[in-house]
Length: 243
Image (cartoon, rainbow, N blue to C red; front, side):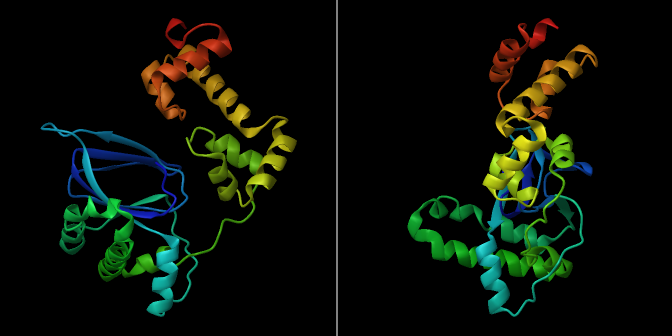
């Protein structure tokens, strides 16, 4: 999940499964989920018995939140709440608001709809705070991550499928500093290390733990099974299905 901004999600059909470092949470139809910006989340969706998985979502960009905080005199916060995703309490008001976004789906694809979109985002913020006042600690926390231990972080999070610039941000570094520090710690560029580390873990899980190939490639950040099989065979000389 590429959640660069805070996002509210309403599941309308099927099941949404989100996994972060705290564990896995499942959201069924009519559940409300809040995904935090720039966090590490793996997403899986499952269709309902009668059809496909469906959701309604709206992003809350930092620029709009900062303007909202200034307009409504909300002080900047520092959140101590943990977790990349939160299950919001049942809220008919917020559910109805999310459903009201459906008629705007096509309209928001046009460039000249930006002012209308900002109005709806502000409405989402007001509705969310009315139902969950404590969310102000997350919404108005505009701080960036502090610089942390790069080796420990990467060994713990290499399986998340995100861009290098996101890894840099989450470790409290600029992209150039991240790349320089990474090569000093691991003696190779981050993209090459990530591929090698994921493939080595895939080999271990398939060969030693007897995990299925279809389960392993998703858990290790590969989006496409055929690409995973190709790079695996190129690296180890045999396709994963032959282990």
